[in-house]
Image 1: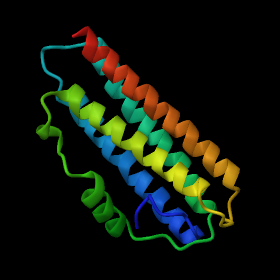
Image 2: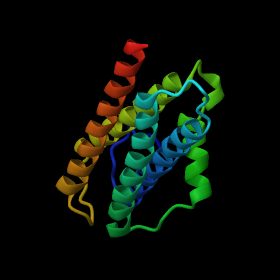
Image 3: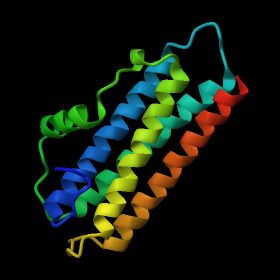
Length: 161
């Protein structure tokens, strides 16, 4: 399933929201990993950024899971969703980047793009969902805005270096 398609059912919406959950898990895991591996070049701005990114991703995941729980749809297995995320968004690993900031920037931009595409796919759909469409869109727009802020924060730190 592509985010570029219209979202036609609770099942499709649940599956796409589950992809968002896994993406958030990836961002959280990478941020946490980078935070733990910080070396003697301690940068308080970078430390705060990584900690905030991990906490924000956990909050995004909880919000998405809340929407999924309200949908009238069977959940897709975690392994299937993880494979979809890996195939679509997991082409890079943290060590593929020249530094923590580039990896973090990629993570934030990927999440932003996913939510942007998902919002568009829902808006183009005329399907009814068992959860309020406006609430889903408001939640996704809020998360997308927070991802955009994350991109800006990473970029600001990169520019100062």
